[in-house]
Image (cartoon, rainbow, N blue to C red):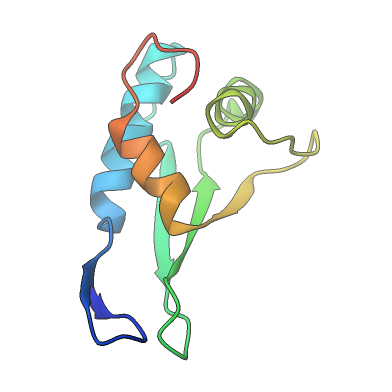
Length: 104
């Protein structure tokens, strides 16, 4: 996805499907074989601001995935948390994260 920032510079943001694929690799790492363990939606923000990404854990075994996301993002979620709203930089970090790495 491309967007203009306030200065008129063209910026490129991660595609939701690419973030979803990377998160699927994390699910495989923790032993989750769900076909689509995550859903990632892009939420456009008005005023030239970067988009927000809504990440939903779809897998039945949510707890291991939630814990892995907490580690990856260095951010705590509640025990019942199955939805995360991530900024663009968090999604870039997710895409560049290597399996087996503790944090980006």
